[in-house]
Amino acid sequence: MSQFAINLLFVGASFALYIGIAIWARAGSTKDFYVAGGGVHPITNGMATAADWMSAASFISMAGLLASGGYANSTFLMGWTGGYVILAMLLAPYLRKFGKFTVPDFIGDRFYSNTARLVAIVCLIVASVTYVIGQMTGAGVAFSRFLEVSNTWGIWLAALIVFLYAVFGGMKGITYTQVAQYIVLIIAYTIPAVFIAFQLTGNPIPMFGMFSTHTESGIPLLAKLDDVVSALGFRDYTADVDNKLNMVLFTLSLMVGTAGLPHVIIRFFTVPKVADARWSAGWALVFIALLYLTAPAVGSMARLNLATTVYPEMAGQVENYEEAAQNPILYEERPDWVRTWEETGLITFNDLNNDGRIQMYNDAADYSDRGWEGNELTVNNDILVLANPEIANLPGWVIGLIAAGGIAAALSTAAGLLLAISSAISHDLIKTMINPKITEKGEMLAARISMGGAILLATYLGLNPPGFAAQTVALAFGIAGASLFPALMMGIFSTRMNSSGAVAGMLAGLICTLLYIFTYLGWFFVPDTNMLANTPDNWIFGISPLSFGAVGAMINFAVAFAVSKVTAAPPQEIQDLVESVRYPKGAGMAIDH
Image 1 (cartoon, one colour):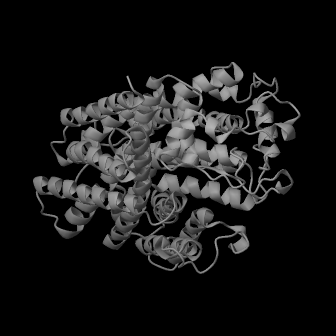
Image 2: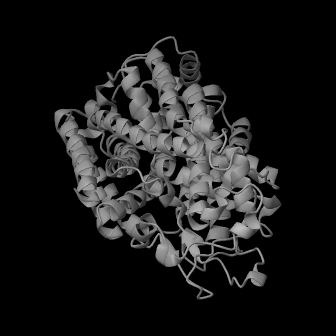
Image 3: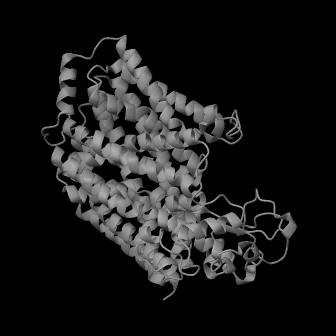
């Protein structure tokens, strides 16, 4: 059986499973559509939350980021994990106690203001649409490689599958689909990692193998990796970072941004009671840890495999790396996996010195004495996880499995984000603010139409992205971290915070964050509209646009507290509500109103 047929079998079977689950768990009411009826078991919800949380960025990109940047990019791992812990410990149980369907529901009622509700809706929609672009793009990359279609057709196929199981199944269908997707993606991620760890170190447990001895050279794997990349002019893989302030702020920005993203928060409204919200948060952390503890090993081993593929003599060296670097492989002798990925355009080779060999090194290094004229091999970091089975010469069924896993990771998060957008429009905007008398049937129709519209918009933007993936993700995390997260925290833990303070804080955090990002990355990411070059020399206090979400959150907190101090205190019933939310001794089912 050909590799294409195997890929088609695995991906097709997973799609059939997702759509079958959606039909079985079809939403019959708004409660089913928004919160899966409010009766999901904590372990089931934990697994679905993990799938919702671990997007294409986690499955496809994170190991690639760690592979390319080493310790410096561990901020992604720390930020995303820390953000989930904040969400699980400081937000989820209290929001579940409140007992409403959505984040704008909480903000609107807690701050007794439709203005606050509207600002929250806008922030939620913009952040979620921006984030879902990355998921559609990630699905397009996976489709284009494994189903041998164009990137455009890959994104449209992803949109169709999401439409079929998310629009009809709602949260009920999405929940059980995400359970299946988690099982697919975690198996797909760990099996190649186990094979590769065993091949390189003799230890089949990836997170331990990373700290074990490299079998071929007899030295620790990370020390081996440092030697190899430094010989090619790159920074040591385990080297420390110079700008600690930016590293701390970037990690914090990811933490507050991820804790403020609404598609995961919604998941905690699907369990019967507050205690179940706490248990499902704990189970989700266990399920997330299985992938997040494996990712650093996958990244480091993929980087070593890539380097020793180009420079085979480096694999067994312990000291003569300079000599080994003189003898890279001939382009005509490149492995089959390189040839396959070249067809997608995600690996490119440009023989600058016309010697027929692949020179791969840091362009900043001066190797002119060797006759090299520049790095000749460009590898997209996002392919490393997907290419790992091929790099390690694993069986075809493993390649098919990881194809299904990568697509599952993208689709699971896309579905959660689209549901958050749908509920914000149909429930918070239409029912709560525009037409309170709308029937349940009408609300369900509005929810499905708005989700369909959101899918089309996300697909269009995925085909025509407003910027690089890192730029769009920065905007999504910045908006969520600078606007929604502080409002949620203050709404739970401050009885004195009033509507004026909350609205002023959200707007201040949102506007400052957008202005800073657009200053360096261009207005709405339109090329050549940036006012300053996006270089460390131009950053204020060395703070990257990707790190500014943390500063935006601080501005939000400061403005909100300042405004609330000079304006009237919230009504007594609101203060009593905050007290009841802060001490969750129990909660009823999620309610509509």
